[in-house]
Length: 245
Image 1 (spheres, rainbow, N blue to C red):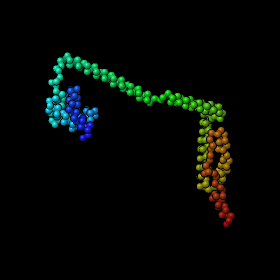
Image 2 (cartoon, rainbow, N blue to C red):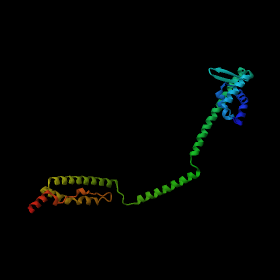
Image 3 (tube, rainbow, N blue to C red):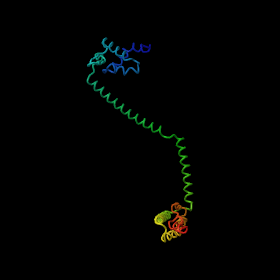
């Protein structure tokens, strides 16, 4: 045992006796140890030994409940208290309890205010943020001014017209592609030749129409739309075979 722990154990009876008389309520050895250990550095063995010593000397009282002992101050050393004194003490306790509750509520309000002030921006930080917002607002104002001054805007009506034209040309393109596919599968006869010439005449239509859309978008026809060469058709191959034969 260290010197400080030995000194604490030696003074344990006096410390515990004073504590029980001040509190004037029953405690177990574990309660006394838990309440005094942190402040006075008393060990549990020293507390149990001091309580037994005080009980044997008659300075405190003990009662056994099952396997547990309860210790409390000797009540004979206290003066008798009248009913009037008890009522006065009860009123004092009630007043002090109300005061404690009021102080606790005030502390909670102060803690909430402190937390809000801690999370809030300082004056230099707020000034910096205000300046950044002003600069950002000036940039957006200049950008809006340039947009309003531009002359190449497309109105909603023009957008709608462009969309309708695009839908129309896409529909026509799919129709021609389907017709070309069907004709190539069945061979080029008179109808196939007529269809090929008709497609050649209409191939420039989407490009001419897209040039009038004022830069909104460009209609691009995929490579699969290109008409296959007439030399690769079944009719051309049959003619070549007859000539060679």
